[in-house]
Image (tube, rainbow, N blue to C red; front, side, top):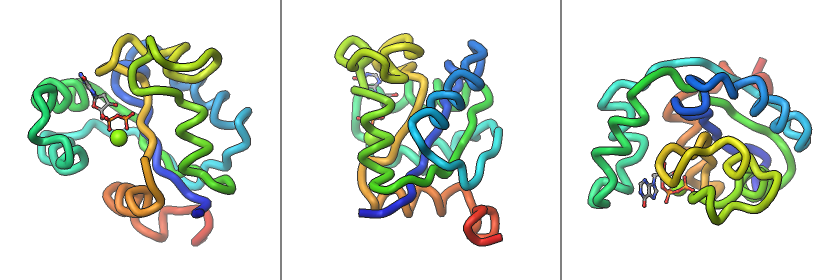
Length: 141
Ligand code: IDP
Ligand code: MG
């Protein structure tokens, strides 16, 4: 299992002022932040990032949501990072998320669900490379 995963603090959470609280959760859960930046996705970035979902009925809404305002993209480091971060964020639908998970505490609904987490080491690597160059990671500085 790899030690890195990719996270997004999504536009709903940034606009509601939850960035700091979610950073606290990241640190309390034992992750090191290897890189982070605040950016506003454009249409091409959002469609490229979520291309696996392009046939899903919620795709257009998802792209509109993800481009609606600034989001924070991060690279997180911890042993078994992908699984550990998915456990920290909870289920996609906050109604199904466990107590004390980020989505349970900060998500509005199944779409505006506060955070993203990679679902495999392979996708973590791809998603990190989508937003960061190697030299932007602390491990390479
Ligand atoms: P994940 O973020 O937990 O990995 P995915 O199934 O990969 O969940 O879906 C990607 C994103 O698409 C979700 O985080 C959420 O923002 C949105 N999404 C997923 N399922 C639905 C849905 O049924 N309705 C609306 N939006 C959805
Ligand atoms: Mg996913």
